Amino acid sequence: MRRVLSAAVTAVSVLALATACSDDSGGDDSNGTRVIEVTVEGGEVTPTGTRIDVAVGQPVDIVVTSDEAGELH
Image (cartoon, rainbow, N blue to C red):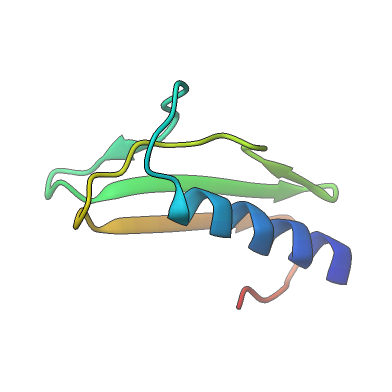
Protein backbone atom coordinates (compact mmCIF):
# COMPACT_ATOMS: atom_id res chain seq x y z
CA MET A 1 0.00 0.00 0.00
CA ARG A 2 2.79 2.44 0.85
CA ARG A 3 4.45 1.66 -2.48
CA VAL A 4 1.28 2.57 -4.38
CA LEU A 5 0.86 5.76 -2.38
CA SER A 6 4.50 6.67 -2.88
CA ALA A 7 4.13 6.18 -6.64
CA ALA A 8 0.93 8.25 -6.65
CA VAL A 9 2.56 11.07 -4.68
CA THR A 10 5.52 11.05 -7.06
CA ALA A 11 3.23 11.16 -10.09
CA VAL A 12 1.16 13.99 -8.65
CA SER A 13 4.28 15.95 -7.72
CA VAL A 14 5.74 15.61 -11.20
CA LEU A 15 2.47 16.63 -12.80
CA ALA A 16 1.97 19.58 -10.49
CA LEU A 17 5.44 20.96 -11.15
CA ALA A 18 5.48 20.39 -14.90
CA THR A 19 5.57 23.57 -16.94
CA ALA A 20 6.56 22.36 -20.41
CA CYS A 21 5.88 19.25 -22.41
CA SER A 22 5.50 17.54 -25.71
CA ASP A 23 2.57 15.34 -24.65
CA ASP A 24 -0.54 17.18 -23.46
CA SER A 25 -2.93 14.81 -21.67
CA GLY A 26 -4.52 17.36 -19.35
CA GLY A 27 -7.47 19.59 -20.14
CA ASP A 28 -8.90 22.94 -19.08
CA ASP A 29 -12.30 23.36 -17.50
CA SER A 30 -14.62 26.24 -18.37
CA ASN A 31 -12.88 28.50 -15.81
CA GLY A 32 -9.39 27.99 -17.30
CA THR A 33 -8.29 25.66 -14.51
CA ARG A 34 -5.99 22.87 -15.73
CA VAL A 35 -7.51 19.50 -14.78
CA ILE A 36 -5.06 16.58 -14.46
CA GLU A 37 -6.46 13.11 -13.93
CA VAL A 38 -4.32 10.50 -12.16
CA THR A 39 -5.42 6.86 -11.85
CA VAL A 40 -4.04 4.24 -9.43
CA GLU A 41 -5.20 0.77 -10.42
CA GLY A 42 -3.64 -2.57 -9.53
CA GLY A 43 -0.59 -0.81 -8.09
CA GLU A 44 0.04 1.09 -11.36
CA VAL A 45 -0.12 4.87 -11.60
CA THR A 46 -1.12 6.58 -14.85
CA PRO A 47 -0.17 8.77 -16.49
CA THR A 48 3.47 7.77 -16.00
CA GLY A 49 6.11 10.39 -16.65
CA THR A 50 3.71 12.57 -18.61
CA ARG A 51 4.51 16.27 -18.54
CA ILE A 52 1.65 18.72 -18.99
CA ASP A 53 1.74 22.41 -19.96
CA VAL A 54 0.57 24.70 -17.19
CA ALA A 55 0.86 28.46 -17.55
CA VAL A 56 2.45 30.45 -14.77
CA GLY A 57 -0.34 31.39 -12.36
CA GLN A 58 -2.84 28.97 -13.93
CA PRO A 59 -4.88 27.04 -11.33
CA VAL A 60 -4.43 23.24 -11.34
CA ASP A 61 -6.93 20.62 -10.13
CA ILE A 62 -5.48 17.13 -9.69
CA VAL A 63 -8.18 14.44 -9.70
CA VAL A 64 -6.99 11.09 -8.31
CA THR A 65 -9.01 7.90 -8.82
CA SER A 66 -7.82 4.73 -7.05
CA ASP A 67 -9.02 1.14 -6.73
CA GLU A 68 -8.01 1.07 -3.04
CA ALA A 69 -8.14 3.54 -0.17
CA GLY A 70 -5.05 5.60 0.57
CA GLU A 71 -3.66 9.04 1.30
CA LEU A 72 -1.75 11.68 -0.61
CA HIS A 73 0.50 14.15 1.16
